[in-house]
Length: 397
Image (cartoon, rainbow, N blue to C red; front, side):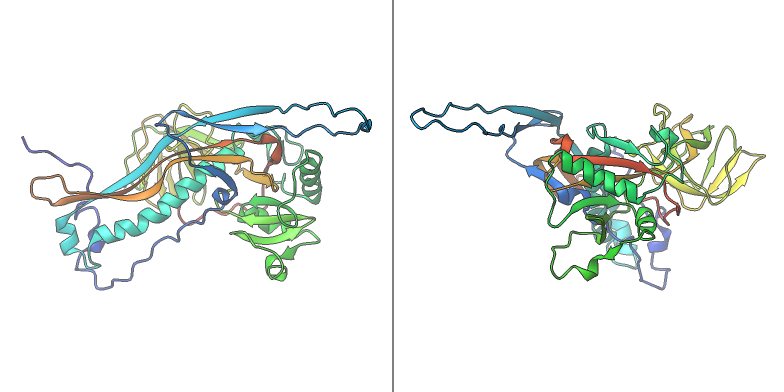
């Protein structure tokens, strides 16, 4: 019996790439920058496998020696103390299959080359989201909320960044003896938070001090001793209080432009909604089953939501659909590496040799074996805030 390869891209999947199209101008979504990943401590001296633990040994500071020495007495011997932190490494990767037929018929040349072009930014985005989730996840013990909120579910759009939050975050890091990085502490923020902070007095654009100071990737400005690094993944769409919520009434497959839901109450065109697994209480950016899409039209009779872009991943019947408050986690850190990256196999592109009998099908992908985890939790402040502007991006990723 012939082997069936169900997942390679077929000519019917990408009709716009065939020679009947008379323009070969392709627009790729801009690749993401590694923002969070630039602030991790990397260790690659591990010999572990998927799911195994990697360990960091952290040495504590020594106590002050304030007793005067006696001239004819030897100094007492001191002791050192340490502790260990650990987290798991796992395999990550993605692959796309193409066929010889579509390579020959494509007006743009071999589609396998296009696949390589889109895999690189996806690999970078995946790594930075893993790093982000380590910074803002459960390992971040020092967590605060905007406005009067005491939990993520209580954050409102009005609970945005203030001068008081900047002063408090800097104070927290200072009293925990976290050194500055360069000439100040850092804050990793979403563009919506940058929009709000630029309206506060004292903002200085990065180009005004760039000549005398090393600028980090994404750095946009400084205020009250805090240097701001912009990152568009510093946002958790619909992760706060629910405004409208329902479930899928039927499974949704990749490529579909509509979803059928149990109830359309509270949903409207223009909303950015999140579809996420039914096992989760709220979307939080940690599950690969989350997808963010914008509603184009609502049909109350058929309980159908038409989407502006087609789905890229599949969703099961009864998965949740939510419109909620967007959460903007602001990560404050200093010159102390707070997140570790256990690197066993560095992310790399891999090309699989054709395995079918006529060598017509080929897979290109990337693979990594690594893990991220908080290693010095006292060097990190996470503030979960709202924002005055919550514009949905053109694409979910």
